[in-house]
Image 1: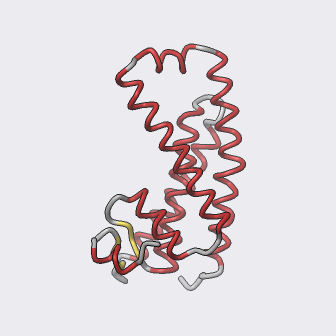
Image 2: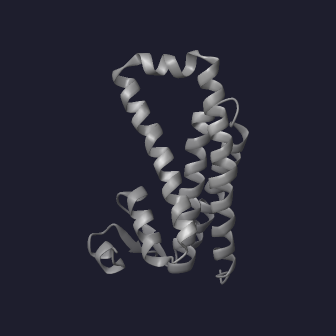
Length: 165
């Protein structure tokens, strides 16, 4: 397991200055809600963007939790480092599983986009058929309702336990 000291030494995380903390927390409070609302609103119309926004809602609330409870901010390799920090700080296996599933889903979309850049046909296949639109809409709906909302609710409960700010 990655040790926090090592992440600090590698400058992947840093302590948040007291003067910076309120601005940092306010940003992530607003950002995760915006991303969650965008995700929910676009499940049917733009399912790929719904999944991306859903993952970013999870990512942002994770950084909010890390900042509020432990006073750390993520500085480098933000997605992977956030997961490493959560693995070090949390003992909740279900919560860790959810963020990893969210990251995996996001990564698969990222890979699809990179592949599609090389092969335009894949983009046309996704956008051009009703079957694929329906498939991704169902996938997005399940992702938002099962993974994203569950994760956010659990993290909010953790943050509520540390409501000292």
